[in-house]
Length: 139
Figure (cartoon, rainbow, N blue to C red):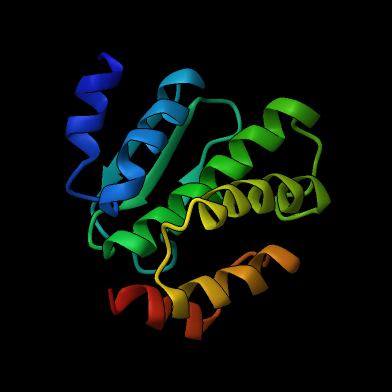
């Protein structure tokens, strides 16, 4: 699949100002992004020994973006630091924060959501706060 085809396929899931850049990241890392049926206990997954991430299909665009960035953070940290790292340890926190900062500084988040994303950058957590999920789901 070309980067352009990937962009087209991803368009329905992401906020408009983010699709091309996410497609570029996925394409350059040779990742497979699978949009999957909703699961009860997880919103996304990154498989350690594969270049595959999954994200639940039922997420609103900004939640879909945040979950995708969370999972890309896992993938990048595994590539950089190896399989021995903690899933939500300092390596993942660093990579996830970089991704969030990049999109925050591009101004893709609405102001109320941007404030919550800034808090997430300062101290990334394994799961999104309920407030972040509610605000991200409202757009």
